[in-house]
Image (cartoon, rainbow, N blue to C red; front, side, top):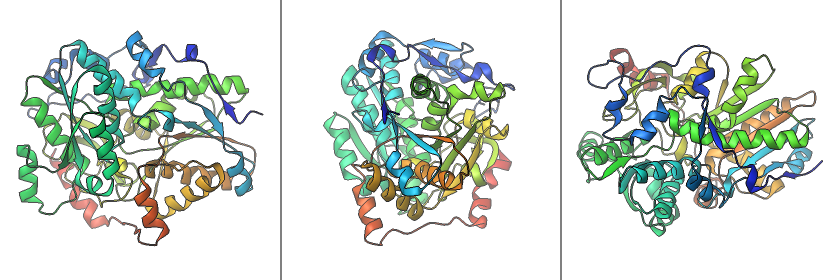
Length: 446
């Protein structure tokens, strides 16, 4: 059997798949942060373009991908589906292990799938600048690239812990023309307030989101762009799963177990959502979402309404959350340091359609070394979590199973993390029940 399954440019999906139309029970509506009432589409217009708001609430199963977006997708799409035969041999497993390699994009991750789309729709509505947050820098890199290709300005608030750990991510964004600030910064009222309330904080995605949203809301030429969590972001990522379905059909196979890391949930959603209708129709299939033990929203959080940011500027979303004021330890998987989970991913978890695991960072880097030393590719710290789960599942297999991983990004700009692991300086971070209970106390008030 082939080691790599490739598609031609003509086989890039022409539509995105909207899971909302196939859910058995409706998604809980977002609520206004001030009134608590269900949000109206027009409430989102100050920070998002109308076209993306329409996608956020769309009841259409298939949404056409505009030709200008497809033209840019062709820079790297379709991405390869690869079989990890050398890893299988090292594990002595009966399972087949396949990975969808999203590290093939110019930014090195799956993030440009939605960055290009968001920049396009904003440009269509006359927006000239986008503001955003980034954790590890993958999303900031993707949006910087998208804005450069489509002629927009880009401002990125990068979580301070990652800003200091990953200087080459910052340089990558600046190379593509973005301005990048360590968050919390002195550029926004939210950032200045957080610095007073939490002196010396390494920052969090929640804090950086507050800054980016405030920036957009206070400048007429600017809209906010989010790299995960929201429905339209998950929608754009479904090109990953749709391509994968075509590739498995060519191979004459079907995946039994689909695995993706989760911070906000976008890469997991992109791979898994196109397969959910098959599970709903009765096909046996497991979906495993893997998060960092330093920020365990799915495995230890509550399914409740919460703010998407620390300052409480965003709409209230029904999601698995550990509290919007929670600040995770500065682990190297910066993209997984988010307090909540995408509402649609959370909904699937609440409906018991997916399962979740959480790992410490040293054990996921051990898995990453095994992958790098057998398959040759150095994975991103976030991707390491999915690889760890896949290796564990493969070792557990007593019969032939087909395991599929969304390889969400490469780790070429994360070598300082590998250095920390290889030299024994990497530490794990355990979150106590007391800390989580205190952080989640606000959920009851909300």
